[in-house]
Image (cartoon, rainbow, N blue to C red):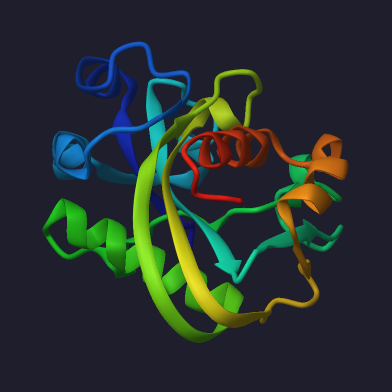
Length: 198
């Protein structure tokens, strides 16, 4: 059976958050119209329909002064992102996450996605950071990131065939910046700017 993904209309996004490009720091409450009007669509349709934006919880994990970095292997399904580095863990929200309440649907999806991908040791803090959108390529044009920062004691990757994990300081990550996915570059720069990554 085909995967169904949670998406919101581009028109409503533009009304709620005009001229969104890159990272936007804004109140979580201001996003309620987006979450309350999102619907499930077939992924095969949503991936190529720019009238809708698929909502993706995107979580940056930190422990002490290090950031979790994952590399997508060639076995990972999204071929357009192979061998790229990412500082965000997350993914599509599916009907299994539906709580008939927008915010809870988002948080259910976030919880399921990070637990599918990571074995987390002691989640100390999870903080919403802002909204992320990038129209520079065909993948990101149909996705909308809701960015969170998580502080953990440690984390290990579960999907070892799809991802390789490492922990890097901000300085180390700067030297690998050209290998980062677009979303990760935007998020990395924004969280540094707002003092969330030091």
